[in-house]
Image 1 (spheres, one colour):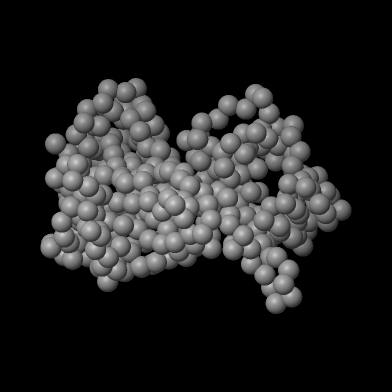
Image 2 (cartoon, one colour):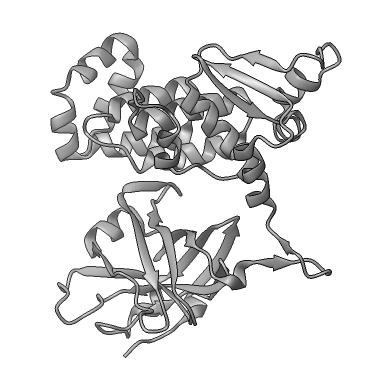
Length: 349
């Protein structure tokens, strides 16, 4: 039996990321398989809900776990989505401990989302504040149902971001060409100037030669420049496989490095939204191998949220024991001595 207690949730929506704060006191009388369901939220022409199972999803579930899932309320056609689901820690930040990413196809015969389990003790210790916790969910449509096409009063389809992206890809009416490490990338002055005050000054400022249609970009990898332009035209991050497919056969760049460099460039061009998106992605990529690198990046760039996530990850007992043996940790004492001692003081036994 499923129990739907939407009043246990409070909702905050920012673009396509949804925050649900759950009052766990409503779970006292629930049993295995009962869920607390979030209020419905609309994305991509479908209504969705987050399901929280405080006693686990099925009788086969261990008694010491809680479960979560995403599901559409109803759909008359096949819909494929990329989605991310996670919890905010006690400081209000997402962490790599529980941050899942999945691609799933839903239809009228398959409305059940994948079940994600988490140990109850981990949730209580790291995410529960005053018997409440917050779930974060974001959804990106992979194949969009026809109901997603919006129409103006004259009945013509309207999808501004798709049209802008098509304009970028086709180079239609482009009036500026960027050169980065031998690659040429075309764009449009007005679009760039409208989205970034730095681009506005550089491309439309009073002292700018409007007859100059070619600009050399130094110190920026072509993939990063393409990522910047993709965000400027679509307001979202590019898919890494799409970027790499246009980078040439000699392109070798990890996801971590891509988002690091993209975040630095986002700050340079004052694209705050892109910078936040990169920090969110990096927070989900923290590992034993890169935690110190991410931490120093966060410290030097004053990225408080990313630093908090890195410190929490590094100071966990089992993680700390492995990280202190790395050469990156040894170098930290020389390059960032304050950070070195801060980690030691915050170590969790």
